[in-house]
Structure formats: structure tokens, C-alpha cells
Length: 178
Image (tube, rainbow, N blue to C red; front, side):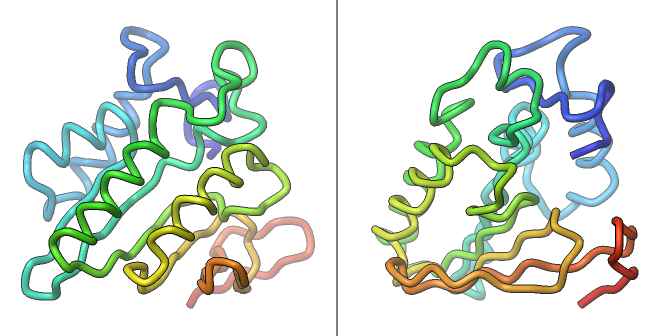
């Protein structure tokens, strides 16, 4: 969440020009998204999110751009205080509905874990409602941001989220990886 300039600046997909995050997402797409097709890469470059089906595994990988719901995202604070910035939660619901139709399992990944204190509570509530409706399809959720090796249990949704540690130290946390 600190890669942009200025830090914590994640404008939404409809933002173009000098304030866009396209430069960051394009760079990432070139470096580590070789497995995505052109449509998926464009989705990532435009919105910082993608969904990718791994057919032989009957799996859909759903990568969320949780930075847009980050409380310190200056664009969210100034212009987009709504619960579904960039229509991402509607997009997630559609992706999970497709998993239902095509009999796919879902792996959801993102940076900020739902329920983290610096992620929008309104966004988190809507996210939990969506995953609750589709919990039988979700095999796992993986997140980061906290620099701690932990997990979250969502009792109502009957799901567990792994929160991965970080190689970057933060206050009292040593570097580690899973």
C-alpha cells in the first residue's frame, strides 16, 4: 500500500492521466502476471484486480485490490466514500456467482485482510455478506498487510483467512515468510 506516489494513493479505475495508478499496475503485470490472458491483464492494469480460471484444477483465483478500501487511501477520503469503491464488491459477487454456475472453487487473495482496523468497516461488512452467500465455493482466502503470521476465523461465514507475514520489518516484528 506504500508503492504509489504519494503513498496510499489508489485512485479508482475511472481515473486516467497523471493521477492514475496504471503505471504501477502495468509494471506489476509485466513482471509477474505472465499467466493471465490479455483481458485479465487489462482488468488488472485498469482496476488492480483480476480473476483467473485454472481449468485443470477447477479453480478461480480472485485477486482483490483491497487498497481502494484502505482508510488512508487519499482518493477514498476525498472523493469516493461509498461502500463499493470502483464497483469491486459487485465484481466479486459476479465472480463468485460464476464459480457457482461453472462448479469452480475460489481462492481469494488481497493485501488488506477483511476486519483489519485500517480497512473500511462498511466495505468489510459488504465483503463478508458476499463471501457468506458463497462460502461453500471458497476454498481459502490469503491476505497480508499486518506483517504478522496469523489467521482470521469468520464464524458466520464458516471461513478461515490466512494472513501472511512479511519480509519487511515493522515496529517489533522480525522478518519472516510462510
